[in-house]
Amino acid sequence: MNRVLELRCGSVDYFGIGAINRFEHIMEQYRKRGIRRVGIVTGRSSYRLSGAWRVVKPVIEEKHIEYLHFDAITPNPTVDQIDEAVHLLKEIEPQLIIGIGGGSSLDASKVVAVLLRNRGITARDIYTGRFTPFEALPILSINLTHGTGSEVDRYAVATIPEERDKSGAAADCMYPEYAIDDPELMLSLPDKEVLYTSLDALNHLVEAATTKLSSPYTVMLAKEGIALINKWLPHAIEDRQDIEARYWLLYASILGGIAIDCAVVHITHPLEHTLSAFRPGLEHGLGLTILLPAVIKVIYPAVAETLSGILRPITGTLKGTPDEAEGIAQSLREWIESLGVSQRLRDVGFTDDDIPELVRYVRRSQGESGSLSLAPVKVTDEMIREIYRESL
Image 1 (cartoon, rainbow, N blue to C red):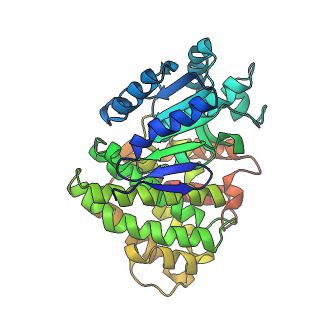
Image 2: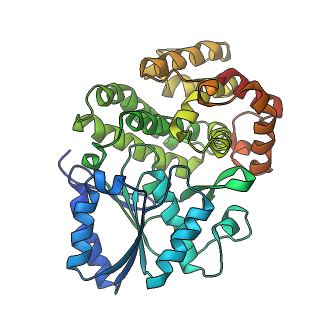
């Protein structure tokens, strides 16, 4: 755990205890490339509470690098926040963007890097499809959660508030050039974030193993990642300072990020994105976890062999036959509840009356070529309604 590994995927990711200390080496490489001005994108506090800022700030100052810092990214960030960051940071014409935080800050930093390279474009232009990015400023991601995998993939999610549309953008230019994954930076995560971010990673692994783009590779990543989450998440819940648990949960999160980078997601994510577009205070990982058993029940007959294999550490040995759908969904729900997640959609503010509107917004945000088209089953409006109803 104390040996910093170099994982090469879409990014060059430094992973392990002490990986944050590679920041100085990375910045020296950028200095050799002539980079002297940096824009930093974070939330309000995690960049400080995690300890990352105690390393980042002195290195930047010692190397005489000019910087501006936008620190107002919230969970479920909006296109307006991204545009505000661009407006602030463009003052110094940054040559590099550094994102520090969980998925929200890292996603926002990617889009900021695109917009600062392509002037005259707004975040809405990207998320409405009016502009397709091919160029961005270099990006460095310092990850602070073991959940999203944003530091190793090309995705960025944001919400257009007036449209109640939370969706993802993806472009090869949005891969971070470098990423830092240091489990010590995650010891300050609040209890609920320990849980919800890990369950976000679980969802990534399940979906990437069962989309139409899945492969033996993503199934392999899912088997490994889900086994690690099943083993180590209870330890992390019991003892927030268990660094070994954080190390392996972070590794599972990286596997999840790589998996969705290869095979994307399908049903759970777009349905949750609509939920948190309606209720921005809903934690992404919690929303996903509430929906997951109902989604598993729907898709199991089509991918029974795969799901029975990757979920075996959680649900036990199954035959992998379609008739097991109800049982595996129930076993998964019981496992989730054993970890302390008992909420349903009613508990986070939704009712039966919301379902028709939720379905309409899912369909509007997805169009004909969204993630739903990659599901292993044909997704009908009635299926979406049933998933929401069963999750109430």
